[in-house]
Image 1 (tube, rainbow, N blue to C red):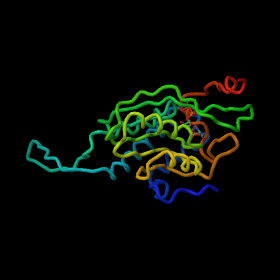
Image 2: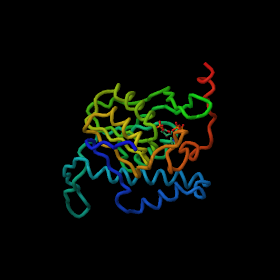
Image 3: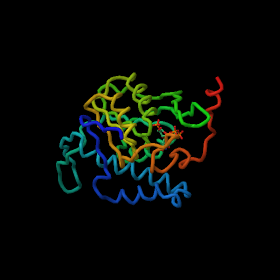
Image 4: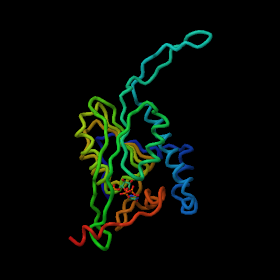
Length: 235
Ligand code: PRP
Ligand code: URA
């Protein structure tokens, strides 16, 4: 059993019962998974709810709003400088959920995917190809990717995004995390970063899928992709 960090803030939303349990039950349920649009929609809704929870931790300052009948001071989020980064492909519906809440945020995209390094599919490497990002210097950076399994994709995304400046704050957001992935990502993050998840599962199977997890998030959202492990394994 991998020990989870005591120092970094790790917020596991499943520690409190909420309607999110229903969305989690549906995305984990292999019968519901047959309906791709329902699956993507639930991923998006979990993104929206996580964004709402995260919004409670941001800084606010009051702004005077004029209604047709008078004025009212409403505390609004102070930081308008937010960048929401995601990892293609499975990150897309989750990212959309965050954007539905933080609609003024800029976006960044990292193309990274897991590739098996052997024929037994027990060793995983990360193939990172492309990044499109604004400067993240001085900004609140949210890196959102539904699965944190080995942590390799998230670590690659963090490394690539931090080339674009030093953010004011970093939040790593996922739906399901494996304890091993949390440890890897923790090493790649400053101590004041926060990891958010909707569940921490028991670990990974031999093929590095989270158990019980829900399976391959990219495939469930968009259909199976070809495995290009041979290219590397044959070298
Ligand atoms: C999934 C997921 C993460 C990654 C997590 O993407 O979206 O990016 O796996 O696994 P890791 O922690 O072991 O790196 P995947 O590589 O399956 O690509 P896809 O989204 O294109 O299907
Ligand atoms: N990526 C997924 O989509 N699912 C897992 O369980 C692990 C990595």
